[in-house]
Image (tube, rainbow, N blue to C red; front, side, top):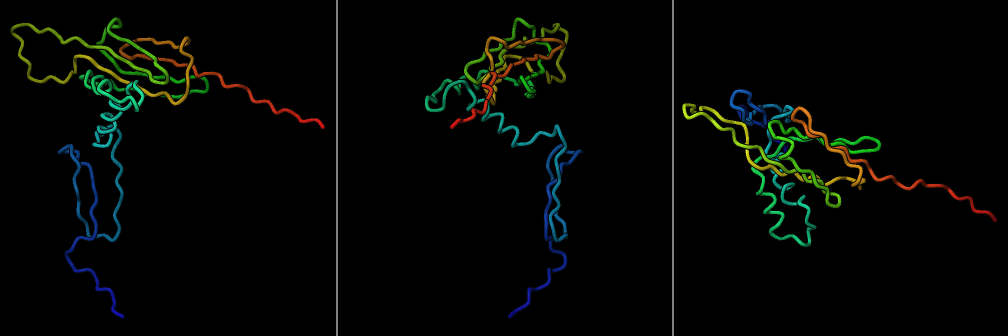
Length: 188
């Protein structure tokens, strides 16, 4: 029976992935430790997983059932040129969606419910500049946007409220009341 040979000096036994604040990119660090340490990425740090999730959400959460998958979801997914950030929260009697859409006039916004899919659409106009103005840096996104959200439960379509205030669109979606369950006593 042979013994396991000890690790060779100078060889790396583990690697860990860290986020570099300086280069704003993931960095692999090699170490001589026995176990790998897990590092959590900070909130707000862009990840490939999150970006891919958004791409697939835009394609597969389109309001067309999957068996009828054709060109319509792809067309709708490519329609938007930017995506506003949003939050979906749940209360006891309603779902609340808040979308950050600053700089978009209320008349350029549209909210639709089809089945269990809520669709937010709109567009932000490109800013006009003076002829003497030269752009050195531009980050604000313009053009159309499209967000589709598949709701976890059925909602009351006639009671949905949407309010746009200070660049935030808040949509309140009351849940469908569930039937009250009563235990029935069996006589006999």
